[in-house]
Image (cartoon, rainbow, N blue to C red):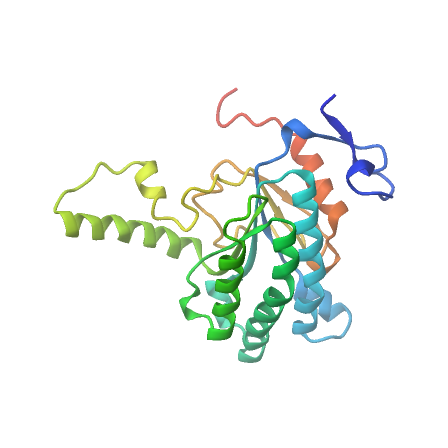
Length: 255
């Protein structure tokens, strides 16, 4: 009674999904996505890399819609890492402009769908136009009660962990009291404080790496890797990941 046919969520599913059933009691609360393959998608078509990033915007829309319609409560997308500053200046500048334009163009639609938009990472280094676009999205949507979309931008998990440690050090220096450090205290200093850990991580393009993404939070996350390049990822690929997740036995170290 808790299994819903895929075509009740999205009509006309492709072959292989037309008879699939999604267990509504086993939808992951939090899904994280490493969006990989934009550059390779563009190279295959003799286009520059920025064209691949632009093509990936539709995949972002599809994934947000699929996650929300499936009952996912938190969706984190890895948009720009701290290591991505090493890319050519032209590509970085193009990405920052793309983030700003996309956020401004999409925020009204997200707001209408009751999606709450947050960023995780150090956005202080972003250009003002890009920062302002993310800030405006947060201010417009922060009281929404639908799915929370976390955009990881200028995000690096090692830096996040150091940030959490530094917060504890600062507290000790301010109060003169050394607290009992446990997971609860440590997690207060993470960018994802008060956000549940992801239950499912999706990585596109077939790469088998975590790429400095949510290292603390992914301790017991199920990992799903697909060879599909990010611009070709759609709602049905997202549903395939959910179905794969629902076929796993999560034991958390037990038997």
